[in-house]
Image 1 (cartoon, rainbow, N blue to C red):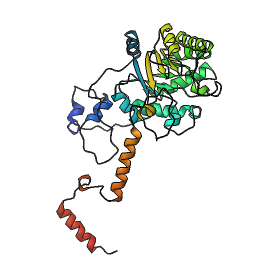
Image 2 (tube, rainbow, N blue to C red; image 1 turned 180 degrees about the horizontal axis):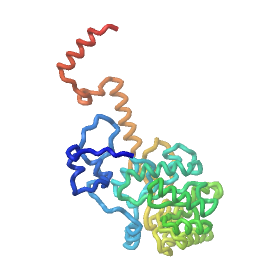
Image 3 (cartoon, one colour; image 1 turned 60 degrees about the vertical axis):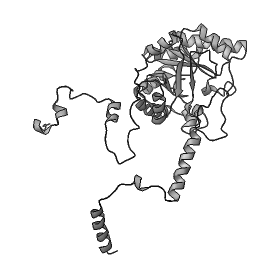
Image 4 (cartoon, rainbow, N blue to C red; image 1 turned 45 degrees about the vertical axis):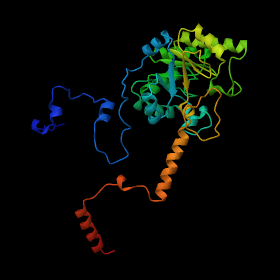
Length: 338
């Protein structure tokens, strides 16, 4: 195949400059920060955080654990929710299967499939520059065999562009976790209340309230640690039990409804930010830190009102045309026959 040669004088100086290789890739945030005039809503969401920080890695999380500094984690399901979480300085961002309900309107997490999780992981990863991102393995993507789980985990990391995966289960899934970890993929465990198995445990019930139940939580946590998990989520477990389990483990525990004795905490962003209509049920462990729904409703209602009364768009929101051009256009319109 012949190649078209372009004279060097036709090339911009930026291409000819020896300071930057021809194959150099401009960082995503750098390209977004370049000043430009746009006349469309299809524009990037903004510049990187003003206070830049280093990328959070497995070693970062281990260092936080060693210093006994709580690890912060929050869920995100798309670019905007991940964008704000990363700007807020979250250590970890989880693309949780809770997006089945909060983003896709499903009844529970058992409905979401692997392809949907990968799509949301990709969206989140595009917005996340520093937080350590984790993608949930949905029900049906890892239970059949360790080989199936590894294949799913590879897809979530390779196609979803996250740094690790999370899966639910304890002792019975230790071989599965080992298989994924041996392939070089970080795994976040999840024991206690495992929502994907709600039907087999009698619904969304607190786990570990009895001595037998508490021992089961401990055994599961120890098993996933031995299998290679870098951390484990403890969900809906009495605070005292979670604190004792945390002390017995060498890896961090991330609590959700498990008290403040854990190594860190995670909440569903939609829940804690109040991005839902009044009257929606919230679990006891959720603290609502904002009211995104009310603010969004207020803004949208104001927009509706101003459109109906023709207050919007105002002259400040329109593009001007030179008066002589407008005069000429008016004459042409008047002269045109319908």
